Length: 82
Image (cartoon, rainbow, N blue to C red; front, side, top):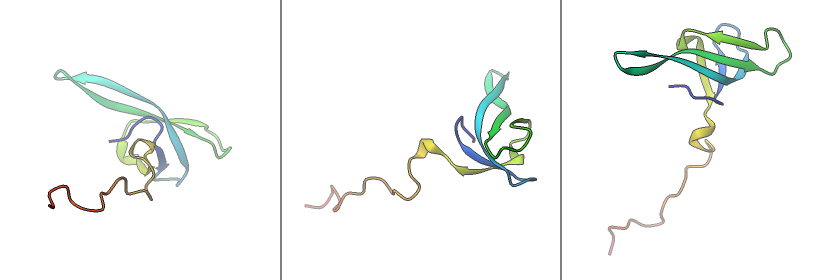
């Protein structure tokens, strides 16, 4: 699932941009995303494009998961060891 501020690539053009907005609708009592607004910073037009199909986008980096090269905290030994 894509989030606001994710860095994505438009599959058809290989342009990279940042998700600027996500539109959603309520279906059977559940909120489901149905539109992703991507702001491109490559100087080409259009600067902002809306996508109705998530498969048109490929996730490059998600800032919500932290640095991809940083595996996070890993203890030097198990807490179960005596």
